[in-house]
Every structure is written in structure tokens, then in C-alpha cells.
Length: 292
Ligand SMILES: NC(=O)c1ccc[n+]([C@@H]2O[C@H](COP(=O)([O-])OP(=O)(O)OC[C@H]3O[C@@H](n4cnc5c(N)ncnc54)[C@H](OP(=O)(O)O)[C@@H]3O)[C@@H](O)[C@H]2O)c1
Image (tube, rainbow, N blue to C red; front, top):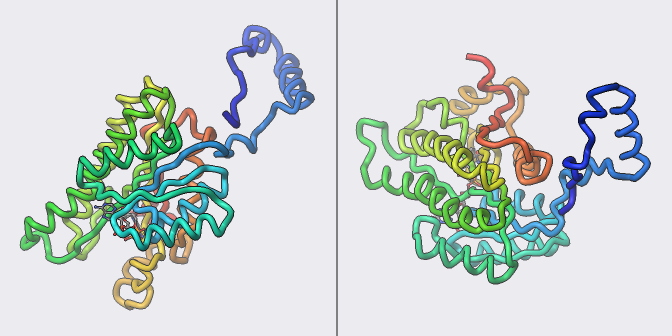
């Protein structure tokens, strides 16, 4: 696989004895053109499943993973949107397919994973973007029906997808899972977010537990936790003076985030560059959470 250097052959005893030996070792790698740092991010030959892959953040992620060489599998319920999204990936020079599946349905998820394995023979990367928010009522009146919908999609859907893809990755003895949490996993927001915040906190818990259980199989499980990223779903926020004032004033970098602000982190977690990182949650928030 790209990006791999056989560290088991390195003579650490010799290196521990002198700095010169370390420099010689690096020089040898340079001469043999074995540095390969760029290859750390190379995803050529990798297969990536992106749930919610036709969505506002899922599609740029699919394009980015594909740009780094991965074959992408876009998952969602709306076949029309998925087909258009795959066309965009191909238009950009990438390769991939879509699979229709509702992530809340165990049978759908199992069939989707089997189809990917039958088609490509492996799954290297999973990104779980499929998610919803129903900010319908304040907590004291929040309907149980909406609560169940949000928890089913954002928690059960992520669990089911990780579980089924995890089985394949366990057999392969390698894999990268990137779950999509939110800044709302850690901080509330005035605005009927009781189910959403709870669900995203659960995604963080799930990510850490999977990282612990699957580290022995060389599967790295991490999460991203973005603040508002401008997509078709959120593009109205800057036009709402109250929300805009409340949220943007806290973003230290002084601007709204755009989809490209998310994809770099995903490429990192999907690639060999993060092979020693698991159970982590990266806040992508322009500095919002670095001050109280
Ligand atoms: N945008 C932001 O500002 C922001 C910030 C923090 C976190 N996030 C998180 O990022 C994720 C994606 O957000 P987004 O802005 O890209 O939203 P989006 O455009 O609405 O995309 C969500 C995607 O999830 C899919 N989906 C929903 N329910 C599903 C189900 N039961 N089964 C399969 N697919 C399902 C939808 O496709 P179908 O309708 O075809 O099923 C859609 O493509 C969400 O988890 C969200 O909470 C977003």
C-alpha cells in the first residue's frame, strides 16, 4: 500500500548510539527515494464508503477522497441525488458508485456493505455523514417521535454502519473510520437542539469505544466535530441577523466555514498520515471552543 515504509527493519540500537547514525539513516532514505511523505496522503486503490455522500458535506468529501485516488461509494436514500453526485465524481475524473440504503435499517446496511465487498473486494475508509436535525421544539416540549427520528439516524445509523463495515475491516486487519459529530456534542445552543446535541455526544462516545475495541485489528476510529459549515442546509444562517450575530461573533477566525475546511481533516484521518491516531475528535470550529 502507498505510504508504507518498513520501520521494522530500522536498526534503533545503532541509532540510539549516535545522532550521526540517525542522520545516515535519513540520508539513506533520501538516496533510495524512500522518504515518501507525500504518499502518506495517497489513497490510490483505497475504497471509501461515504454515507450521506450526496449531501452538502458528503459530496465535497467524496470529490476530495476521489481526488486523492480512492474509489468512492456514496450512500443515501434518494437515488436521484446519489446518481447526480456520482456523475460529478466521474466528471472530476474519479471513480465510484452509489448504493441506496437507509442507515437506520439493519437489512439495508448489511446489503450495502455486501454489495461494496462484492464489487470492490475491500473497504478501507468509512465516513458517516448521514445525519439529520429536527429543531422543532424546546426541550420541555420536544416530541418523542422527533427524538426517535434523530437518535435513530444520528446514533443507531452510525452504529449499524460502523458495525457492518467494521466486520470487513476486522478481516482485513486495517481500516479507517471517520464519524461525523459536531461542536454540539460538547456545547449546547439556544434553539431546540436537545435531540441533535444528545445524538452528537453519543457519536463521540461511540467513536471512542470503537477505537478501544478495534485498535487490536489496526482499525483507527476518529471523529470530526465541525461548527456551522456553509452548505445548502445552513446557507440561510448568515442571512438571519440574530443567528448570525450569535454564532459568527464567536468564530475567532472571523468568517463562516466552507466545505473545504472539513475535507482536509477527513483526508488526514482516512490516510496513512494518521496511522497512530485513534479515538480522537477534531474540532473544526475556527476557534469557537478555544474560549469560553
Ligand atoms: N453542515 C453543517 O454545518 C454541519 C456541522 C456539523 C455537523 N454536521 C453534520 O454533518 C453531516 C452532514 O451534514 P450536511 O450539512 O451535509 O447535511 P445534508 O446536506 O442534509 O446531508 C445529509 C445526508 O444524509 C443523508 N441521510 C439522512 N438520513 C439518512 C438515512 N436514514 N439513511 C441514509 N442517508 C441518510 C441524506 O441523504 P438522503 O436524503 O438521500 O437519504 C443527505 O445526503 C450531518 O451528520 C450533520 O449533523 C453538519
